[in-house]
Image (cartoon, rainbow, N blue to C red; front, top):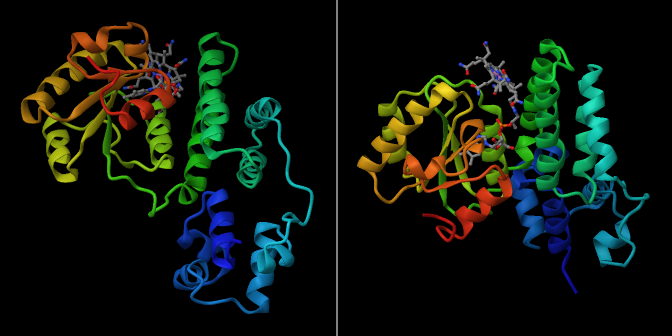
Length: 292
Ligand code: B12
């Protein structure tokens, strides 16, 4: 039978929380959480109640590992309806409610990676589509894009699991003066959830700085994003400079410019391109089986 420490650790991992984050939420020290999880110490009654309320599990389950795990009915969500609810809340300016919805989802069975793909990615793309069709005002597109970014950063402490990094270092940068960084940020955060060591460098970075950052962070992969058509020369030059400095690094390109022309990435000598966030992770995990 699993120990008390195992049960606490599993409950924490299920919510994608770090020990540090949980300690802060419960006003305990990170060392105390670590000691409970390793069964070095056993909590007193008050701390047991704290765990029981926080994870919504019975004391019976915590102490004896009994069958009846959840105290109250578990939160149940249907992703299809939730994604539209999230978008609609943002459409009418209710960002607090949208945030609370995501916080509740994090306590359900839905995986955080699905929240990224089915809710955040869906919302941003839908807003972009509606904007291009002239069906929503520019201020709404700006507001919603910014709120999604804010919600992503509010939940991001839960993403970092220091025990889960596999040391594949991945840099991400936008091409030239392209300010469309949301797509790349989404990709980078997803990779972070999957345990990769990510470094998001943002926009408008001179080539020399990108090259230095590759050495400094000892990057094995670099992701370059380009949305504007006139960003292509910058990506081409950057890819060339990177290959001259480091033949082993894998260069992955993406964004609208590459989505519109399937084999463009090969023409500029990058190793890989995909529109799908999951494919990018798969490529990195399996290393080069898709490339060339
Ligand atoms: C939001 C937005 C903005 C925001 C950007 C906010 C930000 N910080 O990112 C702001 C307001 C800054 C902006 C500015 C401009 N924009 Co704008 N913008 C958009 C809009 C509405 C949505 C883009 C978006 O966020 N999509 C959602 C994300 C999730 O999708 P994505 O970027 O494609 O990313 C996905 C994939 O492509 C992939 N991906 C992305 N990057 C990478 C990288 C790698 C390595 C990989 C593997 C994958 C990958 O993963 C993502 C996940 O799904 C689009 C319209 C649209 N439908 O796209 C116009 C659009 C891109 N913008 C456009 C234009 C013209 C501009 C401006 C010139 C407008 C102006 N006159 O000022 C400026 C340019 C500023 C600059 N120097 O870059 C045009 C581009 C036309 C073109 N092809 O050149 C578009 C298409 C609108 C249009 N039809 O006119 N914009």
